[in-house]
Length: 102
Image (cartoon, rainbow, N blue to C red; front, side, top):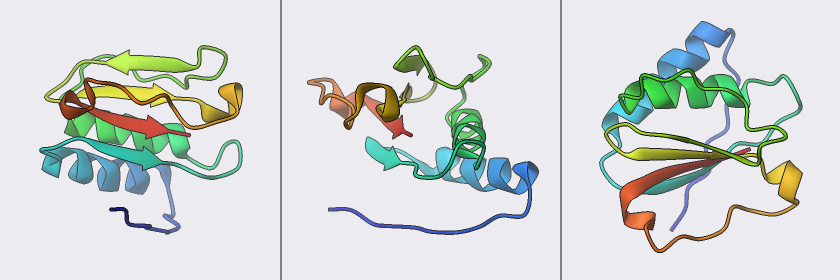
């Protein structure tokens, strides 16, 4: 089952606030696909999501690294699908994490 949410927020602060609120509500695994041009706020969204999940590390873009992993209330895997050319690999530990793919 999936849902598509589209929106345009006026600032990085608004993007972080929305994503933080979402991250705070997550209690089960989810895959979030972030689509947009370079500089459109995908990593900014993931920074807010991480805050809501209780991640205390600095969240960076996964560009040229393929994936960054962050530990919080739920583990957050942040993928750069552009580097690989496809969606992130599935994992047997899907029940323990949030996956954000840009």
